[in-house]
Length: 194
Image 1 (cartoon, rainbow, N blue to C red):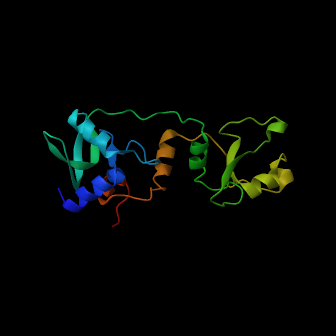
Image 2: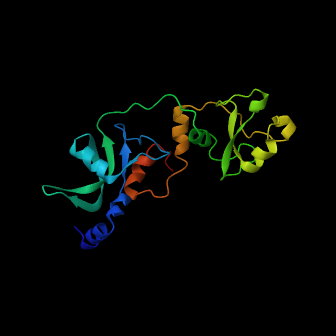
Image 3: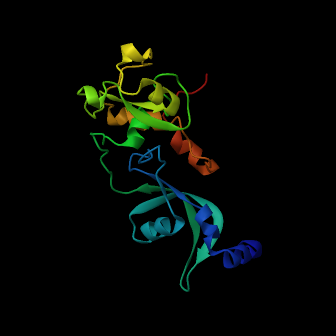
């Protein structure tokens, strides 16, 4: 084991937290894109030891036990296929993902809340078809008014998203760190440049 890495690991036990493993389904596609399906290195090593995954790519760093040593996995693929969910839970996160993390009135990104298109005070319900992501200024401007009375317009009509649609939309929002060994698996179905 590299002495610098060992010293760093001993001085900073959390150092190996920086070595997550990308988890792929049995079809070699990530279980999810956003959030990206990652396991801590310990879970990846345990799954490999229990023969639940195949290791596809590794980091240069090695971990040791008294009886074995293993390179830290950077990409693992499940041996058993996990069927993706068909339905989409109505959550704040999924709503923001559906609306691509931007206000559906002005297009602003950042500090978002959600707004009932038909206000609850006017009988509007909390559903995919009536709730949109909105920035605070637009949400305050609209208040309990109808769209017509507020002077605002929707960028696109709200609707319930398909699970595959959200998975694909999540690909547009990569995490801050993408290890080079992951690239072939994250965008394997992307259109190739000619």
